[in-house]
Image (cartoon, rainbow, N blue to C red; front, side, top):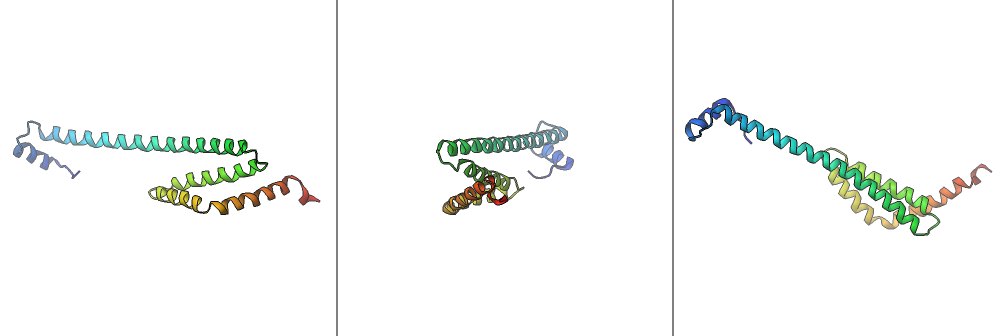
Length: 137
C-alpha cells in the first residue's frame, strides 16, 4: 500500500468525488493497516503454538512407536529420534530462513535414513556400555 499523506488524501477527496473527508480517508487507511498487523501477529502466534504442539505430538508418537516395536533398544532409539525432531524444530525457528532449513532437514532425514539407523545401533551399543558400568572396571 503506498504512503498516504494528508495532501494525497485531500486530492482523493476532491478529485475522486469521495464523500469522505481527507481525515476519514487517512483514518480508514490506518485502520486497515492496524487490522492487517493484528492478523499477521495472530497468524505468527498460531503458527508458533501449532509448531510446538506438532513437536510434542511427534515426540509422543515416536516414543510410543519405539516402545511398541518390542525392540530392546527402544530407549536409545527414542533419544536419537527425539533429538532429530527437536533439531528439525529448532532449525524451523530461525528467523526468515528457518522454513527452508526445516524442509532441507526433513529431506536429509529421509535421504540418510540408513545412516541414521546405523547411528542408532552404535548409540544403543554405547548406551548399554555406559549403563552397564563396564567402563569403570
